[in-house]
Each structure stands twice: as C-alpha cells, then as structure tokens.
Image 1 (spheres, rainbow, N blue to C red):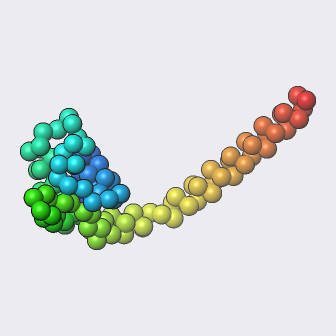
Image 2: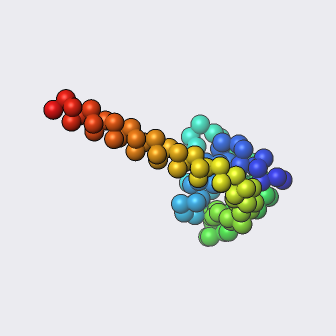
Image 3: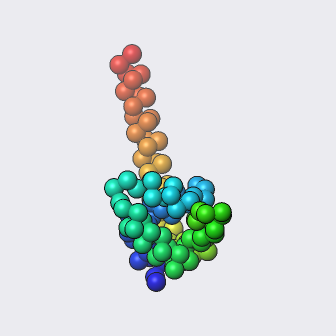
Length: 112
C-alpha cells in the first residue's frame, strides 16, 4: 500500500508518532486510543505492518511494535523537493520578526 495513504489517516500517524519515541506493546497502543476498540487498533497495526512502516516481534506472550523508518524515507524524499520553499519563507519571517521587534523597542523608548 502507498505510504502516503497509510499515514494520511490520523490514528495511524499517531501510532507512528508513539513508536517514534519508543517500542510499545500492542496493549500499550490499544490503551493509547481509548476511543477505539481493540480490533480497530489491530486493523491499523496490520496496515502499518503490511506497509512495512512498523515491525512486530513476539516477547513472551506480548507483541511488541517498533517503527521501521525506511518507508518514511519515501515521504522525506518527496518533501525534500519542496524544502527550498520553506527556507525562503522562514528567512522572510525572521526578517519580519526582527523589524517588528525593533519597532516595539523604538515605541518603548519614545514612551519612556
């Protein structure tokens, strides 16, 4: 399945975010989504596994999920083509904030 389609769903993105911090058992992941049933979380985990975004290992009687970041590289590569738009905008924002800060300082001095 297309990695973009997989992460387009908010619950699956949230699972990826949780696994980006540390490995979690299936039970921990189910507990993280009290609004969902266990079968619903399991379906999300199955799709994430099938798309190779996460992997699962058996530890005693528990299933432990971990992030498999290789597929995230596809998203990063696609986003990378647009990063040059951000740097110019961030530079413009930095300049705007600096000018605003200067004006605020001048107004403060005039009032004093």
